[in-house]
Length: 461
Image (tube, rainbow, N blue to C red; front, side, top):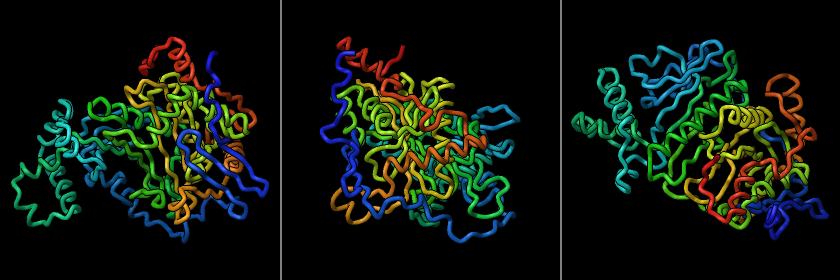
């Protein structure tokens, strides 16, 4: 294939080991520098939960505002997934009166404190909610319970923002409701799982994490989030990118130690995304070459199935695993159900292998609409097992306590045990994997576009 090796190596080797044992990394997509030095390597993933306390079972279902018995403490939901035996179904247009008629395994709700507010979009771009969002707002407010719920949440948000109770009470009801428009037309959503702790938990260290879900539950969780990303693009014509992410545990930035993902529309491409776009324009196959291909060469492939491959990442601020979709379709909301299940199985397994006591960031990446280059859907699972300090801030060189080879070995060992127990799906692990750069089918789309001499539009056959 003409040109397929162009740019296959960066100017500096992404991963090298010095004579004294220091391992230096350079992220081939962003240029981030990372060192693992002797004496600081091989530290454990985490220090554990700390002091263990017995749960107050009287509070079951009420441990935090995301729990199932506190639905009225979050804004009106946009939808939920419910389960009956082996059947999963999505429910929309849930009213305040019917909130507790079913138990939501996963809920899609507006974020009460958006990163980019409703007024940000309205005042800067002239954004207006869709007709469907307006109709949902009208229907929800048409009942006394719905109206009371919305006003209660609007009051709570105003109070948290510093508005005095007396000043809020002086506002006419319609003005109070205007402050609640974001609950129906906002551009920052949260996907919340049902469990706070494991169903039979007796102690407060038995939190319910991504890895504690079954593979089938995780598939529903991931697919629900994927659809939320696609819905944000459809609803907001001014969104240049929709970022999905998950902060697990407070040290990783979570407000609640209750499993949830966030989906945020933004109006610019991040600096990191722009850097990666520059690399892709230099080498359309860069993710295939320096993501999966390089990992295969250096013994960093962790797991693989028909639709995805997981590798130890090189040059990340924290020890990280990257899961790549093999699909030629780069937009995750256009993946087939089978492709999403295969991808979900590996993401789920990475969390299961990490364990519930380790703070983790999960970041999603996909091809931004309209950029004219091909980029695969991928998720980075980062272990927050170190604290950035003055050295990192001053040098922009990050010290990782676990190098990619050690990270891969630990995950492979853990996954072999989990697979034997049936706790994760069945897939190839470590030496069983046959991944190579051509495993990522997006590269075929890029190659076809380059060969034809035309700009890739992101469309698929």
